[in-house]
Image (tube, rainbow, N blue to C red; front, side, top):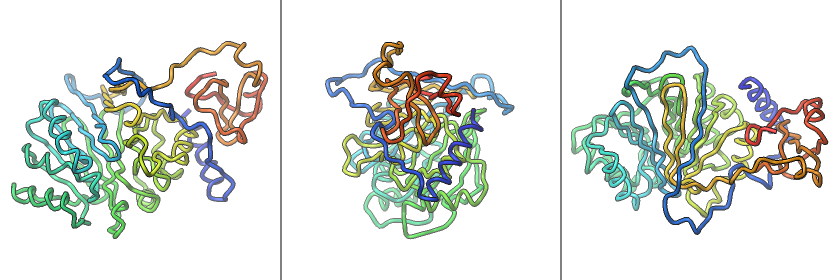
Length: 376
């Protein structure tokens, strides 16, 4: 199945490079309308992946989880492995108290590692709260700095505590509990801060988690040129779902099963863009979003990844019956991705990319495969 997805994405890359591919869709994946009447935490949602691989098993008693913290139109994540804590970004400056309270609720006393993906306010903004209030051992940040209050405060406090900020190089790595952290970017320095983003992958047993900061197509291509193994179970989508990140070539190499988008509700940038949602949909990726799901927690036992969300704003899936289809045909295919769906599927393509089949057999005979969301 993974090879089929890679082939489909490769074809889409070719189409996009020749101008033959259109990513416009009227029905974005997981672009559900939140229920604004829900004001308190509801029963969490769960999704689990099972992976078969020859990778070694994790030690008995080991544990691993990532908290993708809802900081609106910003980024922050807390990684926990075997009692060790790593904070990747800290949201905006106004998220400082949120970061402090979240770490406190997780019983954090000392951070093994702090990562500032790059020196923009919406990533470094809340990190001063961490360096002021918690002990820490290691700090990573790009070489390129930014003369803003949040970054200067972060940098000065780290120096005051006698810690040297490390500028990771592609190929660098370190052990974090029973997991391994590998750095892939930035490959080059540039005045474009987004493209100085630290890109890293955390591998735990047979599962792995990619973080990309705000890296855009230029940095993604630089990383691709280094020929790293970029495959990952979960992708933290770059630049809050902006159109110039998570390009088809990069997505083709990562080939995630799940994606997490840290994004603010009704933000002025219209993130996540339909371009990115369409690419993820074509790759058959299950998407979680902080604007819809709130805090998102991914847990791994080394083989399985389980997601728990603070808010349940996913659509209720109703098992279709043949009577649902008579007005539209039994199945709807996507001309671009070569997937076919139930008409009730929330991953339907735009109307101009649809083809109607009267039976499942007809869809398969024409080279279409079943959608990974509605499983027709």
